[in-house]
Image 1 (cartoon, helix red, strand yellow):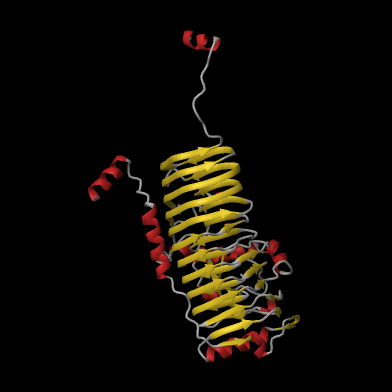
Image 2 (tube, one colour):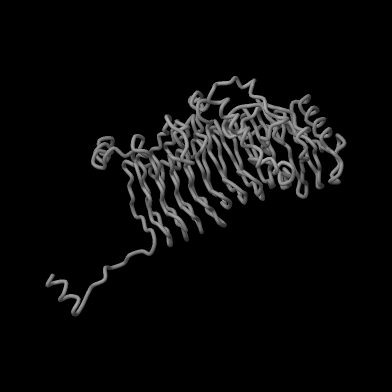
Amino acid sequence: MKKLLLLILLAGGPIKAQLTEEAKQVAIQEIVNRIQLPSIPEYSVSVTKFGAKGDSIFDNKKAFDKAMNALKKRNGGELVVPKGIYTVNGPIHFVSNVNLHLEEGAKIRFGSNPKDYPLVLTSWEGTMLYNYSPLIYGNELENIAITGKGTIDGEGGGDWAEWKQLEDDDKLLSREMNHNGVPVKERIFGEGHYLRPQLIQFVNSVNILLEGVTIEDSPFWCVHLLKCKSATLRGLKYDAHNFNNDGIDAEYSSDILIEEVTFDNGDDNIAIKAGRDHEGRANSDTPSENIVIRSNLLKGLHGVVIGSEMSAGVQNIYVDNNRAWGYLKRGIYFKTNPDRGGFIRNIYISNIELQKVEDCFYITSNYHGEGEGFNSKISDIFISDVSCEEATGTAVVIQGFEESEVENVRLTNIKVKETNNATSITNTKNVVFDEVIIGKEATVPTSVSGKETDVDLNN
C-alpha cells in the first residue's frame, strides 16, 4: 500500500496527497476527543442572592463581583442569572470552575464608561499589551463556561464606537512596541488611548465552554480566545454589528470545536489568528492549530478567515459542512503580508454552501499591500464540495509572491453558478482544479452547418 501511494505522488508531482473523507473524519474526531468540557461543581446559586436586580437600572457590578468571590472560596459552581435585564458598569472577571448560566429572558448589559474598566493583560490586533479590561474576562483559568438562552449585550454602539476614528495613533504605537521589542509590562494603554476592549476574552485558559447564549454589539471583537486550549463553542447566536465585531477569534490557541453557531455580525464570522509580526514570529512554538469548524450558519462580512495576524503560524484546520444564510463579502479568506512571516498549512475545507458573495475564495500574501522582508508560506490547502450562487467579483483568487509562491492547492468539485470573473491566480505552484465549474456548465459542443461548414473546410 505504501508503494502504491508513493507512485501516485510521484506521478502527480510533489503536491501533498489530499486526505480521503474517511481519514479527514478520523482526524477531526481525534481533535474533538481531546477537547475536554469544563468540570463544574454541582453547587448552584442565583446572582440575586448577592443583591443583583434585573430591572435594567440598578448597577450589578458589585453583585457579580461578590458572587464570583463566593464561588472561588467554595471552588466553583453554577452562577444563575434569572430573567431580567442586568446592567453592569464594569467587567465581570471570571474565576475557575464556574458556569455563568443565563436563563431564557436574561440579559447582561454592560456600561460604556472606560473608567469602569481597569487595565488587564490582553492583546489588540495581535500585539500583547495592557488595555481596558474586556467586558467578560479571565486569565489563567480552568473549567469555565457561559451557557443558557440569555443574551450578553456589549452596548458597543455608544461611546465606544466613537473611538473607532481615534484609534489609528494607538494602533501604530502598539505595532512600534511590537517591532521594537518593548517589554509587555511597559506597553500601557488605557486612559488617553483609544483601543476598544473585547466583549468576552479568556487568556491562558483551558477547558472552556460557550453554549447557547446570544451575543450582541461588542465594543470590538466579540469572543476572543487568547493562548487557550480545549474549547467548545456551540449553539451561539450573534446579532453584533458594531465596528470590528468579529464573531470568534482564536489566537495562539489549539484544540477548539466551533459548531452549530448562527452568525450575523459586522465583521469576520470566524478568524483564526496567531500573533503579529516580530512578536508573533518569536512565539512560533504556539501556533493556532487543531481547530474544527463545522455545521455553522454564516452571515456577515467574511465567513471563515485565517489572518491577518498569523505570524506564529496556523495549521491543521478543518472546516466542514457550513452554509451561508445571507450575504458574505468573501466566503473563505486567507490574508497575510510581508510583515507577518509564519505559515498557513494543512487546511481542509469541504461541504460549504454559499449564496451571494463578492469572492468565494480569496487567498492573498499581499493583504493591504504593506510590509516587507517576512513573506508567509501558504501551502497544502484542500477545498472540496463547494457551491456558490453568485460571485460579483472573482470566484477564486490566489496571490503569492514570485519568491514565495502559494503552493499545493487543490480545488475539487466546486460549482459557482454566476460570476463576473472566474479566476485570478498569480505566483503559485501546484494548483490543481478537478471537477470545477465556474459559470454556466458546458454540455455537448455545438456544431456548424451549411455555408459556415464550407468556409471552415476551405480555410
